[in-house]
Image (tube, rainbow, N blue to C red; front, side, top):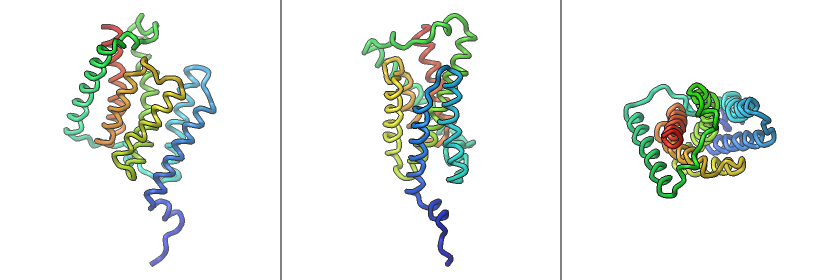
Length: 219
């Protein structure tokens, strides 16, 4: 039998592939800290490069992974939809109950310009919130968690969340105002582990942000 080449050994080693995914993830985070954005446009551009494009190119050119291996799957079952719905409303109910008990519902706010016009509100959630939700879901839930789940299985959830919360802390966004983001990140982590669907994880966090803003800010 012909011995495997170094590249074949690399591709067939689950531990090495998992370790390399972790290294790519760490590099993406480091690059994002080294190149701080000056405005919203640069923030979206740099995040797209470091959180999506960089790991995506490494995934395709180095690891030779398929899109479906990191959550880009088309098949969605009825059980996945049911699980999504139950988890979504359970997460929202938990946030609502927790905010009422701790009297933190008033800390959840939106920029003033979103209250003056429906179209500004729509653009804010479609362009700003939608973009960063996808960036976070792709890098943390899609790339890191799914990549680690092959080796660490269920433990990929707390490992990924630890890095995500550290990222929020390092960027000074781990605070009461981002409580919906924290809860939705836990929900989307559980969801993507169950369904392996990046689309479901993105929709979960994005719709959760929209619903909590409408309920806590406008109602």
